[in-house]
Length: 192
Image (cartoon, rainbow, N blue to C red; front, side):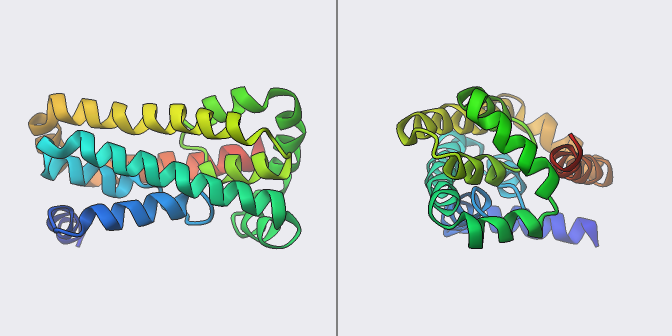
């Protein structure tokens, strides 16, 4: 079943509308959606290595745009929608501490956490809830999200075929590692 899912994702990665789907996932992940865009970004670049930079650009732009939605949720709607997103992911405890730290270290939090598997929606909603400077938030988001997605693109562009072969040979291991990293990000926020 895992092989069929992988083959389907690779086929979808080559679909003419795959960039639109990636943009939608990247946008939504920055404010409320649980699946990181890497789930599409990586197979898309593996399938279309020549378009690695375009794919990374779409992912970055959509993620930053979605980040502004997350910021707006935190800024204008924290008591309703913002708390709902935080509660839906079980991040209440981590968020309270995170928001307190945000007032002192906001820029560094955006720069560091935007590169990690910690859910980016937490960063965007907290930025809005803390009324963090919108221009600094936007510039930091561009820097951190761009770095993350272009780094993935560069690695896959440079080492594409060996990586693709490794993924296809060790699909269960790669999938398990991806899920562990994703879950670890949520756990880190909830308990650290």
